[in-house]
Image 1: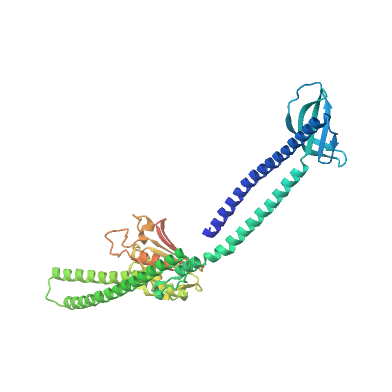
Image 2 (image 1 turned 120 degrees about the horizontal axis):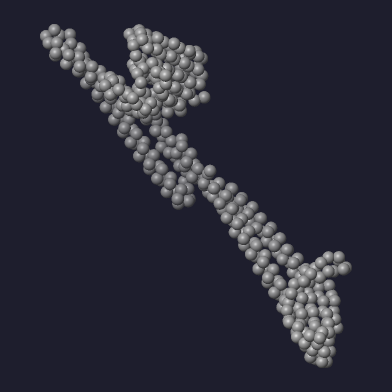
Length: 420
């Protein structure tokens, strides 16, 4: 969920809860205030009745108006508790029950006790409360609508610099060597973010160029002395003046030099893949590459008497860098040959979705997925560099392929699921 969406939800939910609680409280407070005012009016009427009796020594006329009723009833009780109560009064004219407030008290007139009841309708009070609540509810709805519009459009506009910065970060590519162009913002936080991102990207580009130059120069400088060493070793090996032991030493040196050259090339390839130097993509016929490498490795198949079976869809096309496709296919096939057994078998299956290569071989002593790590070998004494599957994994990751390795029923199985 986006930050803005989450903020909007929390903000609107909090606003609704606050307004709901405050609205309920406002309703009861308002009703209490209006009823209290109505009670004050009843007390004023009581005082007027008492003033009239004191002045005229007689009861005022009973009254029955629409909103007010004054009634007198002679009683034998000397004292009636003075109280104000809420009652429902039936209105015959309108055929409805009207909520009302009634004040009861006693008074003595000409030596006689009278119970006085003053009743006032609450209808206007209730109507006023409903009107005020309705107006308040409308105001709340309008407020929520305004908040929604502000959150939806105004805040979206405020967050636009951040979204632009995020888009630039997502599109940032070291191989393009392009500096990030971020929009100016009047918001301090976004301005500081843009400055930090720009500084960081420039430093990363500089470090990338330095690392790339170092790896290329180091590889070139290492290859030159290795080539010289190999050529001199070949000359020495052609000489007849060495003992058998000396010749063994020279052959060992020659083998390790070749191994060092292969190691240098593999590490350089891994570095180039890590630095995304193989960015150009095209439609590559994987079947054609597989068939080419099978033909190239015929002597290796024959040397180990390996039986090859294949089921290849000749129309399998994958969008990727052709050089990386060559390296991927070469590594998985040579891996299947190198780690096979005498008179073993290899099965290659290819369809539009995946490539599966199965080969016989000894039982694994290592967890299969660990063989994708650099310099990780199942057999420590193996002549393998331990980089072949690591290179394959890097190529798969860069092209968003899914690669897996497992051992089942005496077969090593490498599966590459292509991006469709």
